[in-house]
Length: 157
Image (cartoon, rainbow, N blue to C red; front, side, top):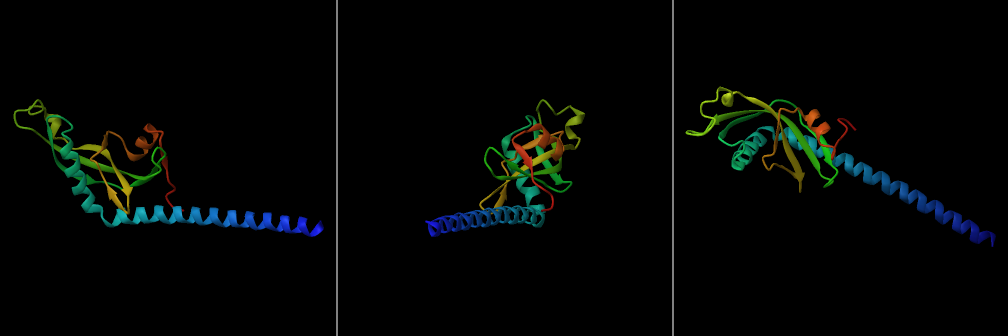
């Protein structure tokens, strides 16, 4: 009876150690994934400006304006979208528009002024992508506050 108890206690101890190791490996994998996301974004900075300009211009928004330029003005803030579990980069950008000829905005002087915004990029299958989603008049930190499903990831792990 005594050896059975020792065998049971030893088995439980072994399972607890395995669970701790698995949890630690899972956490380490997530940390490496976030750092990889961060580094890939830094390396392909210029390509993302073009990608955002093309995708956002195709949306047709804002109406009456054509996307002319988009310049990344700061570092990306990485967040986790709790709805999807994916990593999202919120990037401060300065967007320039040109009114469409004959459109409603043609005679509006403010239409040509650069506008601050936050561009949204998602990390999927090892690459950054954008659907052209931009949150105007928000910094990345304000965007995190405005959308509760976004949880900021640590800057340095």
